[in-house]
Image (cartoon, rainbow, N blue to C red; front, side, top):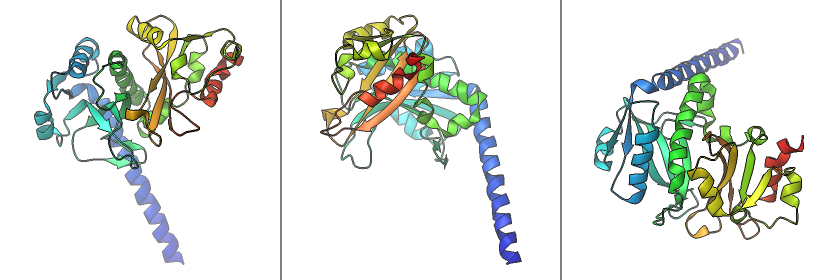
Length: 283
């Protein structure tokens, strides 16, 4: 029995030491982020790549950056001295094909994973449905570039955020209270009754069109937060949609949730989402 207890204690100490070392290494990774080159992967000269290039040229400030091709990425992807910013198609296990395109930041080298943290998925932001040639959501890329950099700054101050990933943004609605909230009616999964929105938000939220949301984003509208909806290709049941709240002047991500689309739960902000977002406005 004594041997068994000592063995458990030894394993516990070893596990604790490993965890501390991993946290220390993760902290060093992000503390030194500005000293490493971020490679921005641009596979082609398509509109999305041109918009991403422009967004990085104008807004990337956290580290040196260089543009590279997919071929160069394949050669360098195992080099730990680089980070990579790139658009990727993603799918869940039950999806037969990719449904949504993301902007993601990864670190070169073999995959390092612990809990929710993975150096191959430091932060993942949904842009648009896969194979979307319309470019309808590309106005989000400059904001996403800032969100990703802000995410790194936050981790540099508190390394624990690295292990939370996107879940950190699931509920920051308290920061919406003193802002003007624009809700696109097209982004709701239900039809609000009468003055429901006005009543819930005490007159500080407005139902607007999808075009109004884009205008607010493009013009960095002051003291404003907007709803963003990213639907999967085909808007197919069983796939996920993403719902975001973004500050148009601060470029802060204040709400990030997803749900699986079904007959009873179509894509869009649900009644529960809206009530959750409205809570700070009640006081």
